[in-house]
Structures are given as structure tokens and as C-alpha cells.
Image (tube, rainbow, N blue to C red):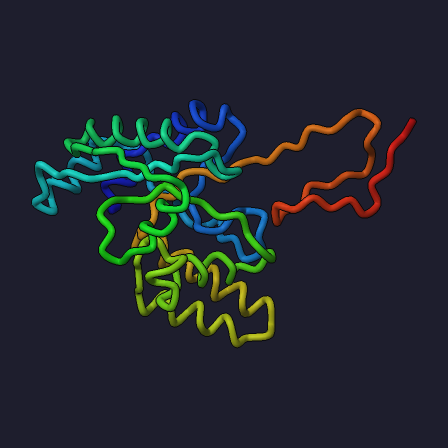
Length: 226
């Protein structure tokens, strides 16, 4: 997994898919959420090192599938293009990649299957601003076969996020979630690609509109200046 992550040119994806309106992701939570661990080091883009890791593991003639969403999402405006870029990057380290897709409802259904073949392109818009809404919902052992699309259950990680659920002190919870992000990076269940930057077009007469971090449209306090 580390080798495949290091083979992906994230900056090229940001430029081609997000048109610069995004930030390279290194953690499973965005930097706008408390407990974000900025000390975590991202895997560098290094195709030669990726090749060396694959060779060290005795892996050659590797084939893979990448699932590309058939729809645009706030976190990924062009999954097909992203899949093509990943396909090209992996080819440079000797990995033959097939791109597959399904109708959106079928895509979501099939991607939950524990025996799914292939890596899935997906993302997440948080529901409540709590790290648990990312780390437990998307990576917890209880979510395997559901919202944990990586089908990844790792007890040291799960123990930490379960402990964070029952702690009331936010500073202590933050330390636990920071630890969870370190474990996540070491184990690499995802290839973290990008955090999207959201834009909302407004007429010039609209004042005091604030973008909702949970994807809603909140009009409290919004006014129109004639």
C-alpha cells in the first residue's frame, strides 16, 4: 500500500481534477477539524522508491482495479480523470490498472462488499465536525461491510478511537485522535489524495452568507443590500 501511495502524483491530480481548488491530503480528516495532526508526514511522490518497495516485497506483474465514481461530488469533481491519472502513475511502477465504474446506486452498494475487487474512489463530507465522524464511521472495525470501504479493521487503531468515544475531555480526545492519525498513516488503508475547497457563487447584493462546513445552505443572518 505504501508503494502504491508513493507512486501517485497528487499535485498533478490537484492541477488536473481540482483546477487548483484543493489541498493535498495526508490525514483522513481535513485540517479544519480539531485534533488534525499536522506533524504526520505524508508519503512523498517517489516512483523509484515505490518500485524499490515493490521489489523488496517480491511483488511483480501486479494488476489492480480502480473504481471511478460516475458522478461529480463536492470532494471529487471528476473521478474518471482522477482514475486515469492514477492508472498512468501506477503503470510507471509496473502496475497494470483497469478502471471500472457502475451506476451510482450500484457503485455505493457494491463498494460496501467485503470481497470487492479493486480500490474505490470516494470521499466524505462531515456530518457534525467531530473527528469520530471520520475516523470511526469510515475506518472503525464496526463499519466494515458498510461505510468502512477499505474493509480495514486494525485493533490498535480501533482501540484508540473507541477510547476517544468515552472520554469527555476534548484535549484528551484530541491526543487520542492525533495518535489514531499516526497509526492510520503507518498502515495506509487509504491513499489520501485531496481536500476540496468549496466555493459558492453569490450575487453581489447578498451579504453575510457563510459556507456551511456540513454541506448545507444556512440563511440565518443573510441579508440583501439593494
